[in-house]
Length: 368
Image (tube, rainbow, N blue to C red):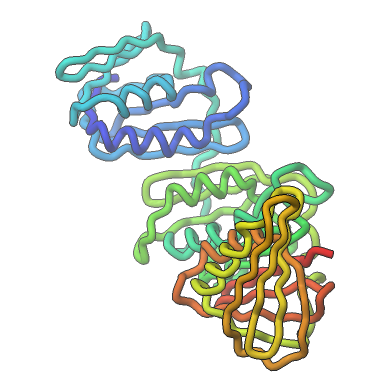
């Protein structure tokens, strides 16, 4: 393989593809990316055997087609530190050589045939959704997934796709995020009767490959044990999380006693200000709802106390409810600053339901 590449374009592609490289040592070859050059384009391939990506590289001139195994970390370091706009890459059975105007690197190579493969997107049944809409839905849900393996399959995002509605759901057992968007079912594609949960790593990889573009569409094929996404420049593969996702609808409040409207940017500022005096031993802010006012109180074990007030259109009875402020801040920072947020409250020991428009809901359990 021999090619001349635009340094910044290849660096960006390598950084995106490297997100699929395993963090732990699985097989030595998986620390690399595979490059396939031919038919006027070059594709980078990376996988950890659970998640994989094929990413087309822009701004690359192929002089000789072929395949090569490229050391991902070293290649990214070379591209980042070089000051050349263009670099040449030449590979053969013995290794890889990268040249610039005043630099040259030689690296050992491996057999491209030993690099594991994963399925291509050839499906006739899938859902389509705009890239910008899907990116927003991922950002509004993936942060609420669990970090560790639990009883339920909550280390990923549940997908529900039927007709013209796509719904993403995430929970870690203490909060629940639900985002909806419009999609198009092609060939009758549906998740009815299934509970497909896509791992957080695959969701983050997909989000990084999406643009805020109203024109670009993403094809989504949810199979019994795996999922494939096709964007304008990549194909992303992932196995699904094993286990059963909990019945999230059972925890949604059927009715509320009070409903309060808040401005996102003002509420986020108040929560962040009050949270300054929390610490790891007391990650807790008290929200005191009183007529026309919301008061946020925090008391650290040794750091001191905080009191933040903000005007509020609230006519219900006085009520105190305690939350981990991080759960609110993570939700607020993925919402438009100028948007309005409604809060449905039932009681001090019941979860609060936050809504932003008709397409986003966020349930938070209070601290007792």
